[in-house]
Image (cartoon, rainbow, N blue to C red):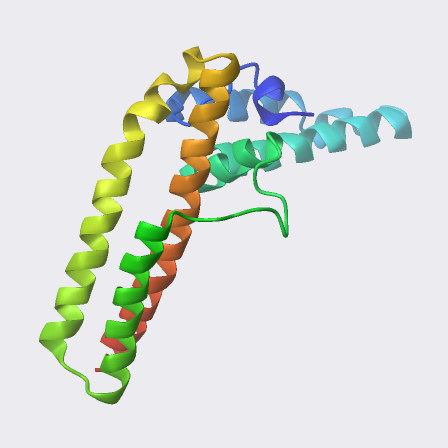
Length: 177
């Protein structure tokens, strides 16, 4: 079952975290296996499945990145081995950052490390600022506009994953210096 349907909330990238948590706790109490210990085995199994579904739904929907990944997968946009191409201008920027990182391996410079960190943080901030209006409008969109928004979110998601790998490399450099 779709997690949004299970929680009876509209599909959205931005959720009311408090309401989500309240729904999770309400369903946790409702589907707690201990309350069904004297029920037939089949009923106990059904409750256990609902309890597990509740836990998985909350774990996914309460994390913004997992929620984004979940929505994109539900729409068939993040299939393994699928077409996950990024715009060439973004890839060029990332290639430059990666080359600067490789140079640090041979000639470490703390100031350069900081500069690369600032660049990648700036790109990440710009990405976040650019996608926010799309995420905010998403629940009201339908048809082609919704599909276009999902494509924009997919591109954002892939760019963010790429940038996070660079930031991970930066933090490894920082810890070794």
